[in-house]
Image 1 (cartoon, rainbow, N blue to C red):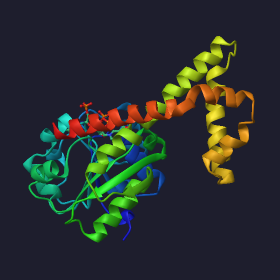
Image 2 (image 1 turned 90 degrees about the horizontal axis):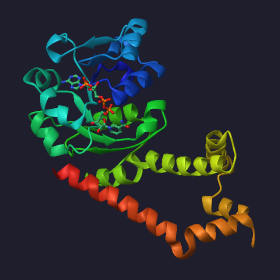
Image 3 (image 1 turned 45 degrees about the horizontal axis):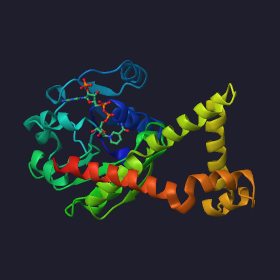
Length: 274
Ligand SMILES: NC(=O)c1ccc[n+]([C@@H]2O[C@H](COP(=O)([O-])OP(=O)(O)OC[C@H]3O[C@@H](n4cnc5c(N)ncnc54)[C@H](OP(=O)(O)O)[C@@H]3O)[C@@H](O)[C@H]2O)c1
């Protein structure tokens, strides 16, 4: 089983839909097998349509009815979901695997909207998916076939790393931890580079980003634990120790960070119940 043999329908080609389209093309899936439903195609979508000849339809009603869709990916906003699940769509995807990355929309909602589809996967990812570096999780309905599970894992791995979770609740936890994760890092970059600028460094942002990227590459190349690399930079009585003492004395920073993430998890849980 290889998703290269599947007809794939992408519903909503904004940020995430476009990320899937480019990942499919980059991974040599034939553009002939990619179908897109998008109300208002963006300039970049029109460009890819012109270059690669992927088929774009404004609504499901315009979709060619003789095409058998194996995978339908839902990449619309949560408030657009009800409109999308028309009888025409359900007719078209009743035997397809549905992968939804729509935030907060539970498996039971998707099952209801799809009139009882047995092959539903709920996935969640984060913004680096747009460049193939997403961190994703996926949760399968008990009734999902193993072939469809493999399909879904293959598809999600095109936009980065993916792990299966056995409990749907983990999606909310993941959202707080890693879905919002890029924003935590960007805030750090903003604070750090603004302070570097105040201290007279013209290329403060580049220097901050390079320090983070370089540290991550070092971590990956050496395959050491972050703790051991941190300890190596932290000499007794030195500059790093002075900063870290201020930052995390009595686990001050750790507690604050954990508290912030727990708020995000709580919010994700509330949103998915509403
Ligand atoms: N962005 C992320 O990093 C991220 C990460 C994880 C999960 N998600 C989830 O992914 C989903 C998509 O996010 P996004 O950032 O890609 O949103 P987005 O950029 O707004 O994309 C959604 C697209 O779907 C189109 N659309 C709306 N209704 C439609 C319909 N009936 N038929 C066809 N197309 C329709 C929208 O068109 P209009 O603009 O004209 O309405 C828009 O182009 C959301 O549910 C979000 O929760 C996003």
